Image 1 (cartoon, helix red, strand yellow):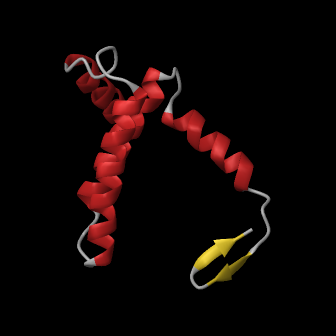
Image 2 (spheres, one colour; image 1 turned 90 degrees about the vertical axis):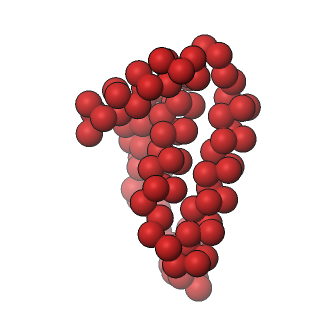
Length: 94
């Protein structure tokens, strides 16, 4: 997986999407991709492309902020690992 992430990072650099873009511009792209995922879920389509596109944009935002996906995921996991909660209408509520 790390090799693939490095290839995606390089793809961003090759297209000047790190130095030549902004977090704000990438957030616009992320919203666009999340809307596409929403449509896939709503219409029960295979979300593989939409999820992948979201991860590609997240790699860009992480890279431009000096972070890795692994660091971000570890941070999030450390926030949630001891949470107690319950399911309410199919959603975990802390």
